[in-house]
Amino acid sequence: MDVPPRDGLPPFEDRTDFENADRGFVAALVPGVVTADDGRVVWDGDAYGFLDGDCPDTAHPSLWRQSQLCARRGLYEVTEGVYQVRGLDLANMTLVEGHDGVIVVDPLVSAECAAAALALYRRHRGERPVTGLIYTHSHLDHFGGAGGVLPREAEAGVPVLAPVGFLEYAVSENVLAGPAMARRAGFMHGARLPKAPDGHIGTGLGITLSTGTVTLIPPTVDITHTGQTETVDGVRILFQLTPGTEAPAEMNFLFTEQRALCLAENVTHTLHNILTLRGALVRDARVWSRYLDEAIDFFGDAYDVAFASHHWPTWGHENVVGLLAEQRDLYAYLHDQTLRLLNSGLTGPEIAEELRLPPALEDAWHARGYYGSLNHNVKAVYQRYMGWYDGNPAHLWEHPPVQLAERYVKLAGGPEAMLAAARRYADSGDLRFAATLLNHLVFADPDHEEARAALAGVYERLGYGAENGPWRNIYLTGAQELRGGAGGPAVTTDTAETRSALTVSMLLDALAVRIDGPRAAREPRLIIDLVVIDEERRHRINLEHGALTHRSLPLHRTPKPHAGLTLTLTRPELLGLLAGKGLAGIETDGDRGLLKRLFSYVTQPDRGFAIVTP
Image 1: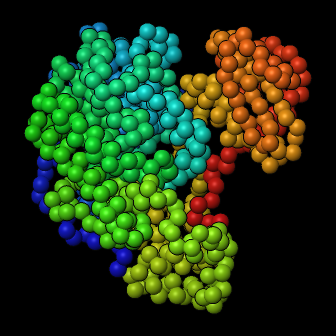
Image 2: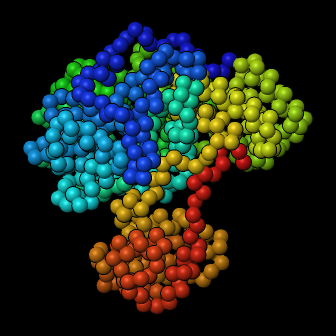
Image 3: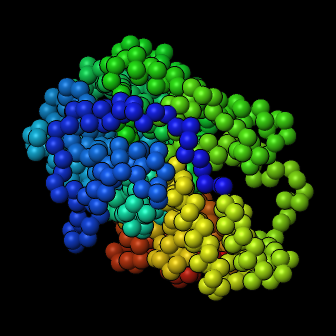
């Protein structure tokens, strides 16, 4: 049977994780619900009360255990002067008390949840102002709530620290490829699934994403190298830069006086993703392992507790070193053994079926595949080195999904014959091949209701058997959509609030990826200059051969040929212009019609595109 096995798990009698998850508890948010200004619920932790019960047949017992841990919520003391709010979004928000106020680390996904977390802290620790903001890395759940802890009127003079490259990578994931990633994230996080034992029980990394307002405050202090120290509100912080690990821009850091080590998302209580299933740049498992080894040496014996951007802390220096060493070896083993088998001629799917972790790692709860799985991580390592093509000429120029599906259905003897065959495979326990056959049938005939229902049933069974949180959510969301459930992303990352943090070049990059190239290619060359007053730069836009390119120049330079239109404006006016507010108040010189022509080629992404159907 192709449901993942439930035996061979670490001992459930080991309650260390539960003891650590409950340690330092101060208070819970009661009720555990956060709403937006319009009354819309953006977070409902109370809906997961069913996790207090025994594991049902509709969930893998190991994932159920992990979800019970992740559902712990409230304000916790990590060590003197260091607190975390956990279970109020997918990630944790950490608060470090300084001389005059509090430093916020990773302000969650949405402004509403971040504000609620800060309010919970203040109810028990006093009305301390936010005197610093730190982003551990460039993923949405670690910056999206910035506006909730640091409103615009309070930003002035408050340092915002992030690893170098943070803004560039935050933009590439949440603006340039944001619509597609957000749609796939809806499957991965199961945001639209009912919260129930047979529905959404968590993601393995946390419970789920909040659905409030995504914001972004750009960094004011870049962390550029390991060994860099900064003092924020009297608190000394020592940094280790870790690019290319869990995120392209990421860092670990030590609060030296508090003897508290922040491991960002580089070390959590799960095997993490080498390639997240929502889509991203492939991460480097080799580099990841090396940075964890470096952390053991670099931070020495200068800490007594380690905490991360997800899950619960680890107390005791030797316990932390043990965790770092096992996680180091986890990523090294995954990387090296994939390469060993790759160099023996195996392909990604073949390696994924063969590779198993050594017993010492397989028996560690923190190395289980709750968020990243060994199976899809192996394929990611293969992809990083070898790309999508496995070397077999038959796979070089295959038909796209619909055309391929039509041929398979015809070969099987028609829709009814393929449906009957798929049911036989499902009844025998070969759910994976049943899903393959039924997926072909649905893509060949999306209106075939029996095929849709059968595929939904197979996906449901695969989801119930999955130890990996995203796998469960993806299967169950696929079943939901096949049965007519709502599509579209639950969280929109490309918002006016996030765009307000972007540089002019980043804004123009975002415009370029929405140009309808085939239509624009039929038009003559179009040149527009943007003279951005508050930046004291000239930005030349060139639309030619269907491609929009741009360059930034000193204000005094007027390149040739002359622009057909020059706009003199401020950066806020540019944001308004790109949002469709027109040219009111903007100085123009030249043919205004060029701007209308440019915007006529700008498309809007489909935020609810089909995934389980053609």
